Amino acid sequence: MRSAGPSSSYSSTGRRRSTMGCRSIPILSGQAMGTMSRSWAGSHRRRGPASPSRPPRRLKIAAKVDPVDRPYFESEIQPLLDDPLIDYVGEIGDADKPRFLGEATALLFPIDWPEPFGLVVIEALACGTPVIARPCGSVPELITPGRTGVLADTLDEIVEALRGVDRLDRAQCRREAERRFSVERMVDDCDAVYESLATGAPLS
Image 1 (cartoon, rainbow, N blue to C red):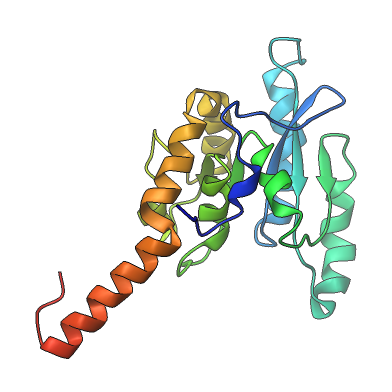
Image 2 (spheres, rainbow, N blue to C red):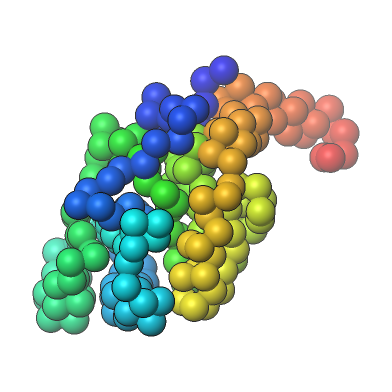
């Protein structure tokens, strides 16, 4: 079954990117970038030193900075990224998303607006990567808490959610993406809506 997302990166072993002993947590959003960066290193310091059984988690941020936002980014955000646990990789294309998402421990999606859908959420699920997100807009309809991710509202809740994200079944994330967001599912559901409209039948 074809999936609406970069499925080629998923592996049943659920491998994760490891760089200098750190597991990565990607965030694909320009929103809340500064807030997450400001709190990330501090949260690790509060948790105490890393150990072989609990390596530090590296926050990898992929986000586009539009020209109109460049002065604000350089003055307010960029200084917050100067931390060994934070990597800002800039904007990435479709060819880079499978590895970026598929080898990560989880995707952070800390949006602060009523998201109408959230394509990156199903891209992550298609890669077998669970999602930790704020419950804004459509997000609660995309994530099944305890199965494909965690809904967390505050920064402390997001950090706490990371402690248990390794227990989520990455294969289940992939199956959920195939079941709910495949090309076939989208086409079939659209056809059903059009047929209902054409025949005057009530929409289910």
